Amino acid sequence: MANALPTPKILLVDDDPDIIELLAYNLNKEGYEIASAIDGIQAIEVAKDFKPDLILLDVMMPRQDGIETARQLRQISDFKDIYILFLTARAEEYTEVAAFDVGADDYIVKPIKPRALVSRIKAILRRDTQQVENDAVVEIGQLVINRTNYSVINHGNPLVMPKKEFELLYFLAKHPNKVFNRDELLEKVWGVDVYVVERTVDVHIRKLREKIPEQYIKTLKGVGYMFSIEE
Amino acid sequence: MANALPTPKILLVDDDPDIIELLAYNLNKEGYEIASAIDGIQAIEVAKDFKPDLILLDVMMPRQDGIETARQLRQISDFKDIYILFLTARAEEYTEVAAFDVGADDYIVKPIKPRALVSRIKAILRRDTQQVENDAVVEIGQLVINRTNYSVINHGNPLVMPKKEFELLYFLAKHPNKVFNRDELLEKVWGVDVYVVERTVDVHIRKLREKIPEQYIKTLKGVGYMFSIEE
DNA sequence: CCTCAATATTACGGAATTGTTAAATATAAA
DNA sequence: TTTATATTTAACAATTCCGTAATATTGAGG
Image (tube, rainbow over all chains, first blue to last red; front, side, top):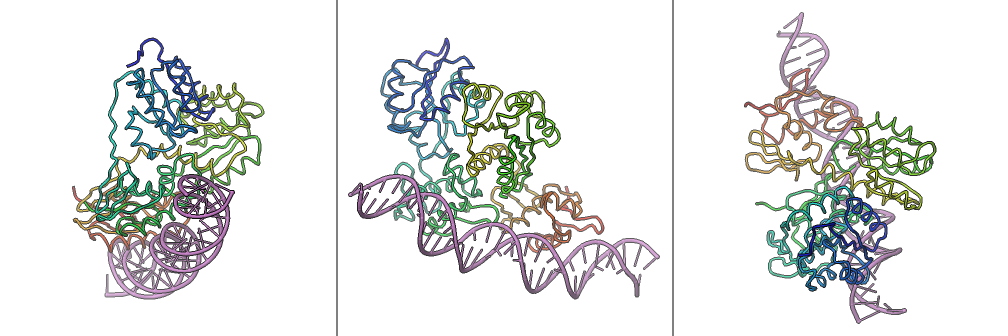
């Protein structure tokens, strides 16, 4: 691993200059040495030179996304064991699985709360890698939902569904017997910086219901939607 | 509104009445309780009284700017950890730096897009209330009342009940052997700003009694209703 | 065992929520 | 680009649920 003793060095990678500035200011104040890049390609160049101890990597970027960037970094011997934190707009980012595949140490969900972020980075630089559980495959009832290849199999026969639909189903199925209102679903599935009308959820629920057995998705009027299954 | 928890309170601070009105309208529509102030001095006075959960603070204001106001707020113990969002026309660096220095949680640039703003505020406030999910399940007598999926299980067999009914039962069962008069129930279950006739409670009690064993809900004539159980 | 105020019960109308469809945008593929 | 597909919005239909009021019943104090 890269040496982290004197002043730890952190590389920030995000295409939004406001985010960079926010993070740079707060981390710098904590005594870290900071460098930044606005996309994945640039990030790798800068990293070779700067040799950071930790990289904060936005998942969604132009030119080259965070996942691919991480993968490439991991192949460079200097960064084999570097700490990588992903920055994502939502907890259930579709890339989550891929992120852990390429060895993410943690992920930070937007909107960023500077104070929380700083304490998390401190914690990571202090302790050794921690484990985060994650299932790429959810088997529930007669459904097999596999996020590594975006497939859903119902009683043996495969279903095709578009991304949003899949992610909504995946999220619900991953938290069975728990109600979520539309706001929560929008935040968890769509992301915090996506601003769509609440009722959009209804339409996707409708489409799911066309494809999977009706018993699964329940409406709790005035409360929200739920993936329901008996134990 | 979506949730049944206490309505979050938001304090709007801006010297432009049009902005206040725009924000107040949109946030009020979401069910938030709103107060406003036209400058920093007034904001602090109002805040002490109103005790908001979140403050939207314009940076540029007469008399006292947003940064200074935030700094002062942070020194009052009640507002040590309050959410502060700054509102500004295009940010200049020193402003941003200063803002994060006093613990800004987010930064919103004018012109304001109401829907985006509302969505961001929701996300921030939800993070807060999500924690209090510990006692989501009440087991009492032969009933299991689960607020994560609005389910009630009586001696092994599940009951379905609409939202209001469920919430009334949940509240009563959470405070067993304690009498509540109709006013109290209306306030606790329906909410403070809801105006309905007292007898509405009777009807919901009736519906509950159709579904759960009669021993549980007792009427104390002239006093109120109670969820009764022997220790 | 009356009285009558408090509660129980019932049913209906309207308000609020969700379902459904189709047209308008946005995004991806060819 | 054009074409196809996915996503979002908007409008309207369907449904459920809630609140009210009208009537019946209960029970505590006399």
